[in-house]
Image 1: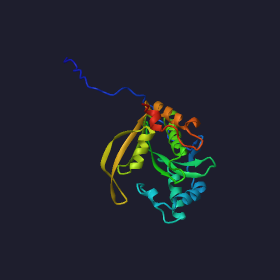
Image 2: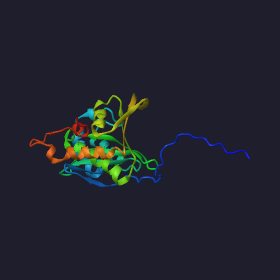
Image 3: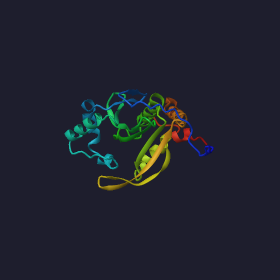
Image 4: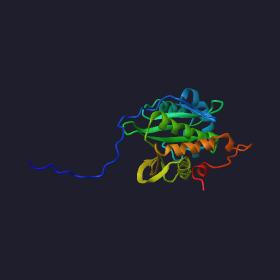
Length: 232
């Protein structure tokens, strides 16, 4: 018999093939507020109040702006009911919604998930709660659900979103050119990701930044998230 030829080719490291669970209707509590499942009946009126006067919020989104409160509420009801993309309201200490984010592009078999469709109202932008919400979602994804890869994608022209991704500890992976057509315009998409092996370092930086000792009496940060994660 002819001997079987042995072919040596590089392959990836072995990985536990067990799929990750889908995200669900959890409440993620923090010091500055909490993240909870979006509920149009409870959240729509306040979200419309804080978002209706600023059309720039919707510039890079697939949806919006909305002509009236009814249309907006109907839209929230539809996205809140989705089962393949889970929307979460970001609420302040008084329980008032200040924006939302979703866990999307969910691939449980590969344990890959994306945080996206992020809308922050004016009162949420550049606040500790805005950062804490991203920490709470990332911790949920990695530590509770067990995903391996956490993605962040945005319009390549959305400089604010790209800065935020890098600030939170995501690594830039490249540009998908002519990736989508959004509202009749071309969209090149910037891709970022964080791996489960990178989460401990990102987590430690988040927690040091969120620590009360990192804020002065006026609530200003003493050290930035980037300075904590990448000390000189």
